[in-house]
Image (cartoon, rainbow, N blue to C red; front, side):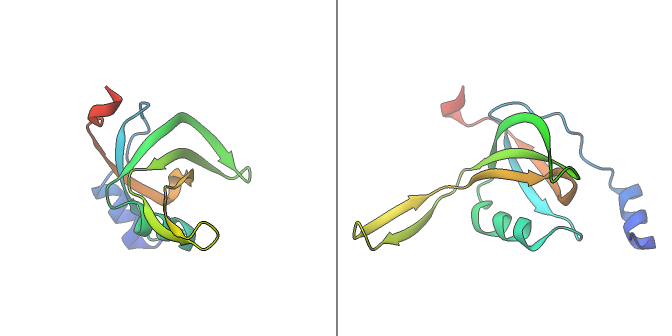
Length: 111
């Protein structure tokens, strides 16, 4: 349920257009109604932005449309089995309704 302030916010700041291109760098920001999972993904992996991996919008659970992204930032985790530090990136789907974004230029290695 949207409050009066949310409706006013949507009027002042219109929603982002969904015209993505492959390889485009996108910086994401969670909205007020976004889930904890989306907020955590943006907080952990989104400091340097995400690369658009798939331009088609697929529904998650037949309710929300989502876009496939790859993180540009990795996290370091220690692997006990291999006894060394491993780098991990995030690849997955984020619901479009839960985020707002800013587009940046393509990375040099994508040109």
